[in-house]
Length: 97
Image 1 (cartoon, rainbow, N blue to C red):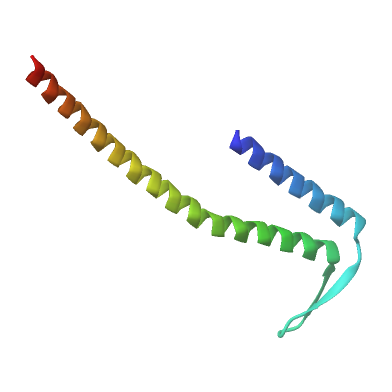
Image 2 (cartoon, rainbow, N blue to C red):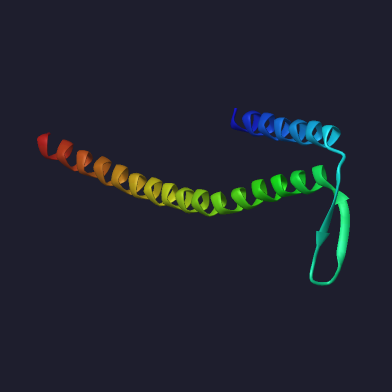
């Protein structure tokens, strides 16, 4: 389900960028230290949008990976506690008989 949501967001971003590109055909001059480049305004804005999305995903990935590692650690602790509880129940059942 989340993949579908991510896909819909990506398609929405791509369509927004395409619509912006179609409506804005103005040329601008980007002045670098090494020279200048003339490009369309829409390409600069769309490239900035894509770069922002990629950087945001990269920053978010570190949090997601950390949380997944914590989930794995907690699942291992839960399995150990479950085995310990089962062995304690077995011991107490033997004591009752």
